[in-house]
Amino acid sequence: MAVTFHDLKSASGLKKLDEFLLPRSYITGYQASKDDIAVHAELSGPPSSDYVNVSRWYNHIEALLRLSGVSGEGQGVQVTGSATVFEEVPASPPIADTKASAAVDDDDDDVDLFGEETEEEKKAAEERAAAVKASGKKKESGKSSVLLDVKPWDDETDMKKLEEAVRSVKMDGLLWGASKLVPVGYGIKKLQIMMTIVDDLVSVDNLIEDHLTSEPANEHIQSCDIVAFNKICKFALTD
Image (cartoon, rainbow, N blue to C red; front, side):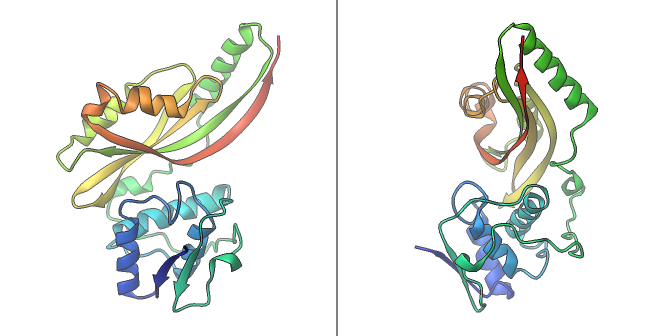
């Protein structure tokens, strides 16, 4: 059954959406979809920072649309008080350049988690590729950019120690990038952090299960979610 929202241009409609998004990263499912596009289209611009969860979701969808678009089909969503119905919304509508940035007090929100690859990341990727090539095996590999949500146990969790626990995980093919703290409500913040991985060397599922949510990191980390997973490149390695 389709998710239904009412009059998202009103304060009461935005409040309901904010409550709905408190435990969620997307409108439906575990990846951005046409459902997110449909709701995004109903907002005339960036929502007030008073709606913490709506602002977090809106800014993330804006970033995805600018970079790679959204292709997930979703489960269906409808907004009453408007003409928008899920099936009529295109997968990746153009985003107007004139939209103003959301008003946010926290300077950390200026961190561009989807920025261009740095020289350090390029050099590290080249070194990893050379190491795999030196093994003498002919294979195809690739590199991906992954955005993780790392959630603490409660509002008393030391977020500095939580980030240190995340970055302490070291393995071949893994490079941690920019991060920021995102409010989720009731005084609780989550860590949002980028990482670049070599696909043949790093399994994100294993990274989460065997390192981030197991001892000793789970003293600070309650759970991890994959927010975005984008392929950067694919290359053939020969003898």
